[in-house]
Amino acid sequence: MSMLRSLIGLSSTLRARGTPRRNPDRQGRGKLISKQGNHQFYKGKRVRSVGRINSLGRFKVVDEKLPIYQVPDLEGFELKPYVAYDTPLVKTPPPKLPTQAEALAHYSKVLSSSS
Image 1 (tube, rainbow, N blue to C red):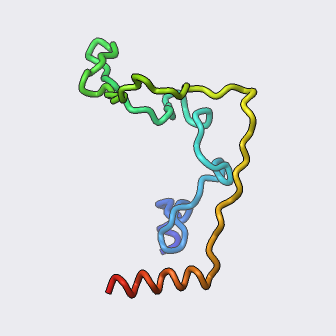
Image 2: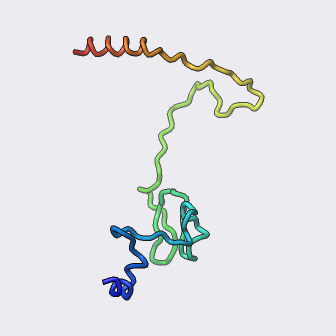
Image 3: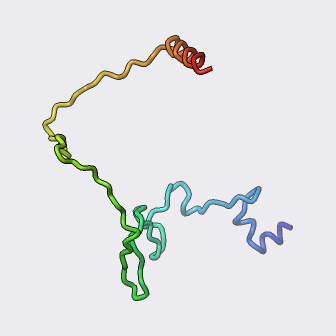
């Protein structure tokens, strides 16, 4: 049986229980980057396509694929979109967490009122 597997090549690609062996070139490198693939590998930037390539090889934008942004009316809005570099840092104290006894009392009150 092992001779038959070695002739087919299964022993080099399969481990126990049928799990595939890791590629030694990729072992311990993490994710595949664009420089590790061949010349046709294009990783992309996880951006949605807004069109398609037509039969002439040109990119055609499809209107249905364009994103639609809904911007609220900012008439009379006082805040500015950016913060100046010389704005002083405002430190706020961390929120006070309840003690275990306070939390148990609160949850027991909530549970008793709901039933």
